[in-house]
Image (cartoon, rainbow, N blue to C red; front, side):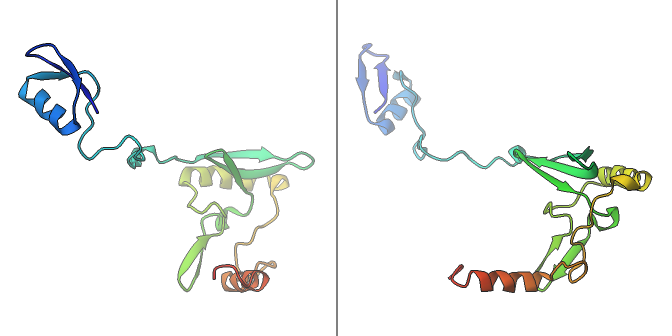
Length: 161
């Protein structure tokens, strides 16, 4: 219950929230405690703020301990992810019935300026090229998406039921 102070006699009292709001609105009292809005609760979750969606940080770097390798690094919410394959496959979409995925395993498209920087470094430094990833299903030992899903279902038959 909010506390209010009457402007008529100076008395401080606790009253129901709806009565306190009306008295303050009429100008016969002042609120000593914050008056909650009728449908607001202090235990509610904060509202979604689309301006606070985190953006990944991109960079082209050389990484490795024993063998140096040129990579595109994406840092997002403390996670660090790398792509070291061919620039031609970096933003390739691999489609199947019902969806697609990016060949870069970032789950999103790499920005054009980062990809251009990576392509230039890739072209000028063949000794820093890493192994090719799974850009094309059924090539270089990379299974199709449907095959990957069926293998997972065979390993974990009761999952998802």
